[in-house]
Length: 333
Ligand SMILES: C[S@@+](CC[C@H](N)C(=O)[O-])C[C@H]1O[C@@H](n2cnc3c(N)ncnc32)[C@H](O)[C@@H]1O
Image 1 (cartoon, rainbow, N blue to C red):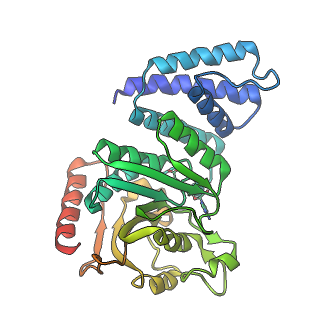
Image 2 (cartoon, rainbow, N blue to C red):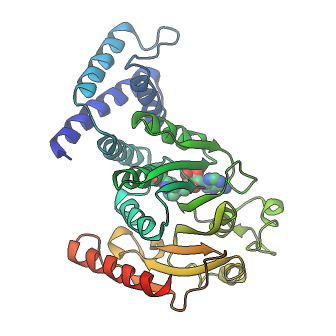
């Protein structure tokens, strides 16, 4: 990937989005969606009630021609959309539970899914797809590694989901997306892999929460616990779940409720603690939880993988983690 090409594309796209933002008097994210939809719609600016005006339309469409001339490839589009959305998130002060998952974590997910998969046909389900960066990083990464991967995503927030849809269209990637609360019944056929960067906090709908083993009796339940349980309902027998959760997930007040669920229909096979450098405070540190559904070929591993990744910045240390994972897998799974 050529960094200069991405830099040029970034400034062209940023100028187009900012021009739309001013002209429609809207937020960065709404302008981002409008811009992406215009690009997909033959690079023509949508005009409603003579807005944007002709001069602005001409300016934006000229920017579109320059962007198209760059002939960006799928992964280049993804990198570009990630940079633009990170820029927009800073500008708009997006809350942590809505922020996109950086591709450094997505690339780790790709490695783990490749290690765990028995087939080249993979349906990947993300119950908290947000702006879709994690799902698109994983799907495109797997495709580049020779898999036929299809992404399915659900999110409760319509703006974030519209961004995911617009990004999928820019990358010519057909995602199956649903706008709804993932803790209600889903129209998702069983998948090989469920994964996600789960929202952390309380789920306000107690009546709905009661349908899950992990619900709390005396207060609102943890949304991420319920989402873990719900996601694994949509995974095939012996299929895997990979989820980003707070590193202290078992030590919290509701941790025992999660333990009540684990071991029944789902095995906890591993916990990979992510490097401290990725998080601003001790409190915000996260780990990847590796779950496996019960099923003919599945069993609780003798030795649960417990590993802390020291850094993602030193290739030798990342390779040594890959080796450790492969060794663990061959003697345990
Ligand atoms: C950390 S973000 C996910 C970021 C995403 N991986 C990405 O790369 O853009 C968590 C997401 O969970 C969504 N969410 C929260 N509660 C939900 C629910 N009950 N059902 C579906 N989505 C939910 C939020 O709207 C948010 O988009």
